[in-house]
Image (cartoon, rainbow, N blue to C red; front, side):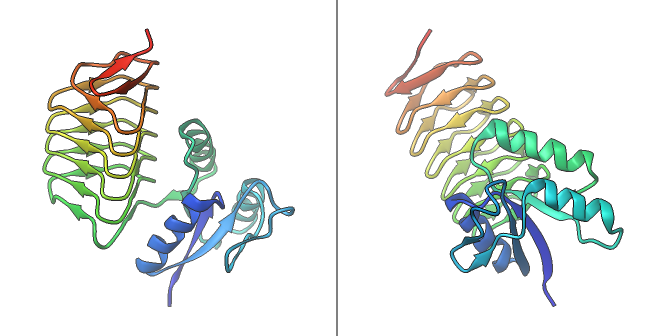
Length: 210
């Protein structure tokens, strides 16, 4: 018998997370704030809004409260996760079966690790992160809460990426570099110098907008 998993956010990103969840033995149950105008995503039904999910949990002590937030926007994902935690939900971490995770790596609650990703020894990944398809998080990296490491990103050893930053698809980050909080690294960038908080940087080498 499979275990139910509530997925908050019914988008393309949510489809991939539902697929991972099902491979791990869960039954996916979608909730999205566009309901009822949006009632389905592919073959999955959407059962209500996030508020509906919270109301179900509050009304029924036996309600299965396992949940993952499938929203790509870092700020909105953080808001939803914090709201769900305040309402006593169990934030589930999903790790794709063909990702490679070191026994010495630490991965926070509510993080989703996609197919082909590698997280190496003594790397630390925070709460509510997205480690997307084929991303590499090398040894001793630190990835802050609610951060998105996009597909085919390579973080070399000892890199730090701050809270709620976004490292765009195909980017490469040199060893021991620090990327600050709330940063956006443009797709295909090569980061060879530290990036301060709250800036956009892009190019090869990446240059910030300040």
